[in-house]
Image 1 (spheres, helix red, strand yellow):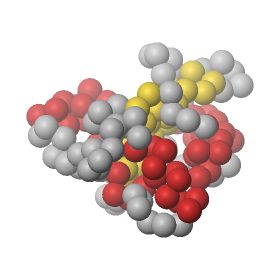
Image 2 (cartoon, rainbow, N blue to C red):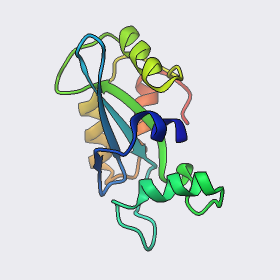
Image 3 (tube, rainbow, N blue to C red):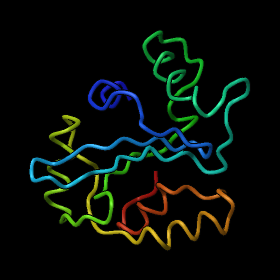
Image 4 (tube, one colour):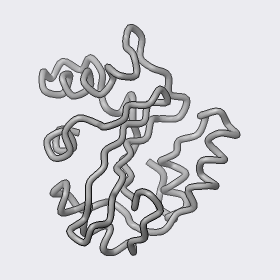
Length: 141
């Protein structure tokens, strides 16, 4: 989380559903969207607004006070081509690794429409990240 904060800075969007997003660009000019996905059944922590959550988690990590841990809020970071741009999984994984200084745990193609449909159908009772992992045929988080 601290590497994410250091490399990408403040999220450009902080959603009521708990998602946090950033945008960067590959050296080849492909826009990338980074999305931190909330845990299943996410609710905004008591006494916070959706605009406060990122800052409280980062401050808690820096202070080491455990007030709000990343695992209580998010269960995975996804990076994908934004705005309908195309990029193959290999170059996308390389760009993500270059940007954050860490190689991704997985790379591949997923069907965002079916994932979004499942999340909507269950009213957020499923983990978007687990649905991504399932499509990549990896063990769940």
